[in-house]
Amino acid sequence: MRRYLAHLLRSAGTVLLRRVRTGAVRARRSVLPALQMTAAGVGAYVIAEQLLGHESPLFAAVAALIALGFTKEPRLRKVIEVAVGCTLGVLIADLLVHAFGPRALTAVVVVFLAVMLARFLDPGPVLAMQMALQALLVVMVPAPTEPDLGPLTRSVDAVVGGSTALLIALLTPKDPRGEPLRTLQGVTDELTRSLRETAAALRSSDSREAWHALIRARSIQGQIDEVNQELTSAKELVYFSPAYRRHRHHVRRLEKVADKLDLAVRSLRVVSRRAVSAIDHAAMSDAGTESLAAVMEETADAAVQLAGAVRETGPGFDRRMQTARDSLAAVAVQLHPARLGLDDLEGEALVLLIRTMVVDLLETTGLSHQEAEEHLPVLRS
Figure 1 (cartoon, rainbow, N blue to C red):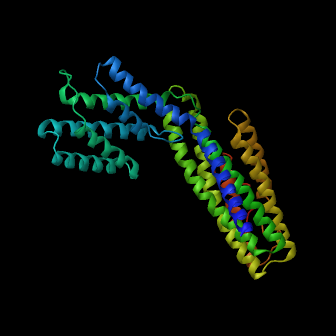
Figure 2 (tube, rainbow, N blue to C red):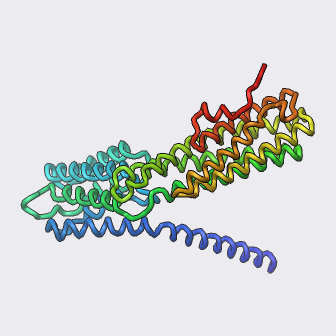
Figure 3 (cartoon, rainbow, N blue to C red):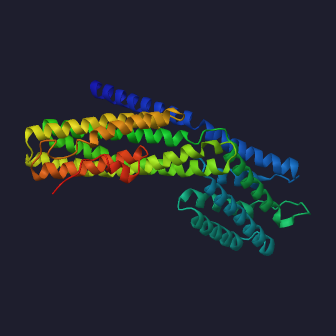
């Protein structure tokens, strides 16, 4: 019994420690978004109260917080959409309350319209909940008594809140390339590991290790989808924010790298899946298998160079990309079944698939499709 209790305590302590560490990392990464939300909410309230003279401009702060949201990199288009949606929601609610009074039926109509507008703007459940709460507050909180604007006062507060959120998103001093670069590095690192696992599986004729490489390659897709979303946010910031316009060229190049890496990872999945079949059927000679394993290792080494290029934000980017291109070109010239000692169907099919993957990787370094294919030896029938 004591051993069991001691085991439970150790397990609970381990879980608690892991949660504390994870929470600390998450909190550290959330400092900037928290500061953005604080500045947006408090700033909108102060502007509406001190500059416009509005009494208790609650909806300025609420609209700013909802529009900005809590994201690593606020997307300008989404901030604008939500800000407009909040303003329209408050405006519709204000007009209905002004026309019919703060009644239960009015609240039903206002909340329903707010939820429908939120669903039109965003598929997530959070915005619908926030806008429904905001609409309900419009009905429940007494209207301000400013004679100049009447029922439109809270709508003006919502405009102030949305505009403040947009300014915060535009002017916050953070390099928009940060998140895409970190995620792209993760993609290239996982690509390298999968290539090495495939090479090891071929060398040891272990189909289970080839499956592990395939599973790893499949898991990269989530990171690629994430980096595409982050690059969309980065593109919006570098095009519309004066503080980030100097990064436009680099963000465009990162977008091309991400697009070609996506193709390379898809090709790698096909290669790994074919490697499983080739190992299971023992269809290739030992010499041919060793040649293919060596090619995959060299490709992994080139991917390391590619990962180094992705980490560069200055002149080193082009230099590292050239190094990766040279390494991949050295791999490409070997990709002929005869040069690799392969004369069986499984081996030839695998070489063809690797050729496609290497072309995708060469395009990642900046070559066109035609330029990349020129590095491959010609296959004669």
